Image 1 (cartoon, rainbow, N blue to C red):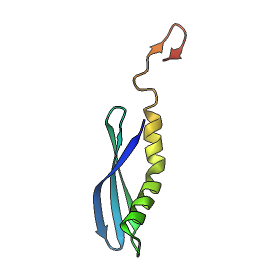
Image 2: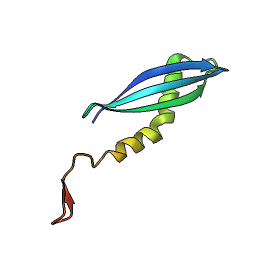
Image 3: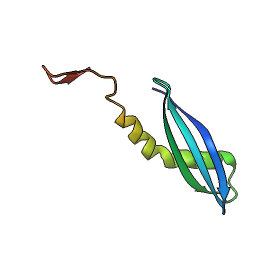
Image 4: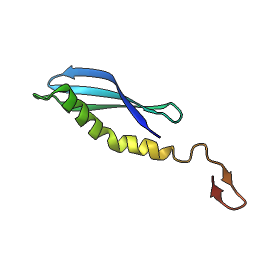
Length: 82
């Protein structure tokens, strides 16, 4: 599974930047949307994007983990997932 992060929105207001990512799982094209507010200061767009990416990792990792059993088959005769 590889994840692709595309910036879906970029809104600047009162010294902050609200960065929105569309995260796509290439294995099935499922999408997770997340927004993070970053203090702009004198940072470049690349630095702001990196900070937003870092700030989103807890939620993205939880999304990935929640999908770990999707598509598996449960065999009740021996209590296994395959």
